[in-house]
Image (cartoon, rainbow, N blue to C red; front, side):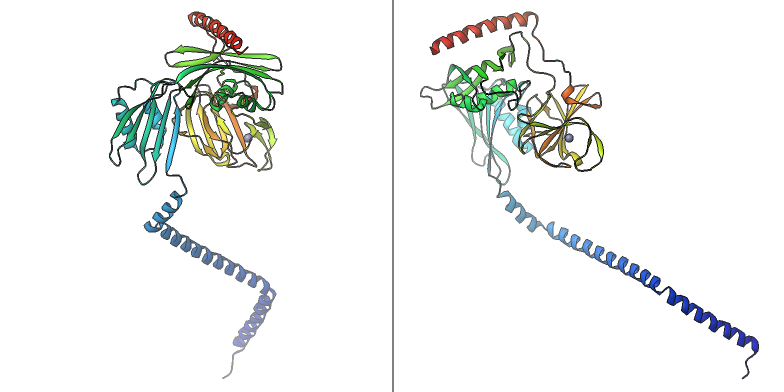
Length: 448
Ligand SMILES: [Zn+2]
């Protein structure tokens, strides 16, 4: 068969095109390989991802297995002690409802406590500094197995649960403690605590002493060797001194570098006591500049290079370096508006003090007992402990003060000092002060 010239032409041009395409393909071969490689990579990642998802799914499925859950639970619960004991000291404004509310117990247990307490005639209203003891059993269903309420320094009422029954039997324990007034004075050698212990002052009284001065004295930085203190305090003891309970501080003086800081106990109302200096002025300020004791200011408020993020950023708080576990105090009275994980801030607490001031405490290792949203706190109450959670390079407290919604420098805070007694109350205080001064000279005379 004869091929027409046109057909020949087409064939030639077709062959020419084929070789050209082949040449081009050779020229771009590396490019084609590259595309192929990309496809392979995408496929492999996809396969790996879906496989991982499947693995996670199976892991979750086996973790939600009820038997495994149970064995994990028993495994971890054995690491905790079975019984919890709580020694609570009644604060101003407390009632049985809010005290039991801050203890981790099932609602039915809380109700049982309240009805039991209300039935007992010996127990009337609560007084500041009164002691309450709780013992909780965590085995199976968490329950209250014992509690003790101090009625007076002469007696306690003890409630014990009757086996598995839901009732408590109560008995009165006679303590017959006598009130003893003690006067101690000392020159601080290495620390206030050690000097006070050497003088025979009980730890509870020393802690109370430190708390009273905590608003204006930093015991780590302000106290020097040779500074001195005086203290008059009450202690409750039984006849053979086998039982000793600490009572209130009546008077205290801290002499720092020649300056006297006197504090007199004064009863303001039926259940309220406070401490005032010789001019009837309370040491308490609305907010504390440093809500932590024995810490070092490690980073001030202002512009700085962020230690983790690297770039320059406004530091909207003040950092205090302190060992993990150091207690952090509520800077003032208020309501907790946040006690949770907050990202870069780690475990953090926010308190609303009034319509003007709020404070924030960040990077905590853990929260204080009963600290949660909605809970009322007192100035100086422990709300958490120093840690390094969130965006943090080491254990420290990040403390923020918010004034009318704006973050301000807590160290430059000009806060109104606590109240000053006036009028009738001031007159009563002056009489009380003279009485305490007389008592002091008698106690000192008794020493000689
Ligand atoms: Zn900070």
